[in-house]
Amino acid sequence: MLDLKIEGATVVDGSGAPGARADVGVRDDTIVAVGDLSREPAGARLGAAGRVLAPGFIDVHSHSDWRLWANRRAESKIRQGVTTEVVGNCGFSPAPVSAEHLEELRGFALYVPAGMDFAWRSVGEYLRAFDREGTALNVVQLVGHGTLRVAAMGFAHRAPETQELLRMQRLLDEAMEAGAWGLSTGLIYAPGSYATTEEIVALARVAARRRGFYASHIRGEGATLLAAVGEAIRVGREAGLPVQVSHIKAAGRPNWGKVADALALVDAARAEGLDVTADVYPYTASSTTLRTLLPDWALEGGVEAMRARLTDPAARARIRRELEAPPAGQSLLDRVGWENIMVSYCAVRKDAEGRRLSELAAARGQDPIDAALELLEAEGGRAYMILFQLDEADLRRALVHPAVMIGSDGSALAPYGELAQGKPHPRSYGTFPRVLGEYAREQRVLPLARAIHKMTGLPARRLGLRDRGVIAPGARADLVVLDPRRVADRATYEDPHRYPDGIEHVLVNGRFVVKDGEHTGSLPGRVLTPP
Ligand code: CU
Ligand code: ZN
Image: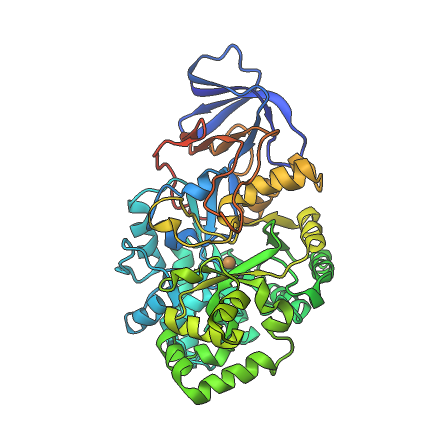
């Protein structure tokens, strides 16, 4: 007997093939039958006529490893239909940790919820601690290169000594053995940005030996985009492992259109036989920490050192000079303009949230650089911003490219409690429904089944996950029932803490986490280990 029978839905199986009407039978945490199951007895039945039944969505680029410690229900993700998140991205994971550099890692972290006690050291210890509490969705952990570097050498702005590199390699190897899926870098963020390509290749080789992949927030997404994509591909070629170019984009008006060239590099690498893919989120604004405005050297030594520089007149003058006329190519500011930078989160100056830096400066009678530096100083670097700097045509090009999948670059948030703060980028609430509603149904940029493939089968293939991302007998019962006429994002830049429409039921490992649009409180997710 089946535990659950989902009846009469249009099954879109994640392969990219168009949907077909079928029933789906679930026993325990597994899909056991697909087809006409009208004669099969079942403990529970769910009528889904007129609805689409899809595999649970895989968010291939997430930062929820921190926020899930504050709320295990994964509200903003599970309500989009996300059933697995890939975390530890952009060079940044909560483990491994070394006792000598623990405080630096905390400073790096910006946001450390109460439950995160850093009692762990290795990634294995971390994953066990995380899994103990239960979670609404499944988690795939990457190891951040920045975290490895902090563990081995703090925020030192130099190449690692031989011993330090060996230590990073050993920590990564242990992590891969303990259940991590690969290595991530964040090459615009200190201390990841201090690394040469050779250092990354030396680490990626360790991940390659354990059959992991390499995910990169590449070294530049503006003027240097193509060189940066080239570097990611080079790491794949030299270390011999698959490459995921994270949140592909061309930042700043002068660079609009370059996503086509970046995708041509991906195509060329694939033609050469390299396994290179990318992900994208369906918005024309990006978001990151406010301190990313600063030149690299200003972050050296960690957050306290940064704060000291902001109060030192000589250092501050140098920061100003470099912001006005950056030594290495384009400045973030030529690309964006102060009026296109919105402060999205502040720990201290809540009045600044939701306002443009140009507006804040005008209100205080300041010049925008002073306004930004003063805010950074007040926040100790903890503030976040949203940058309106991307091109819609570039976004559409990425959305339709066969090697590009969907990743939110957001975290699991909630419209209540401590995760309801600020005006975070709406991608944390809207990414997947926005692709399905705005881009598939309304704009017809791609067919629904292709869009779903980019959230299911395609990321599953990237991860080497055979039993998720598809609807077929034997696969795990991670499932979404959605209304294809209604599915839509509702989160906006002004009002981001809003759940989407049209996601009716979500099952993780055979259990309802969302039923009739409401969270059941169930926590059936687990830390997934590589095949
Ligand atoms: Cu990221
Ligand atoms: Zn990133």
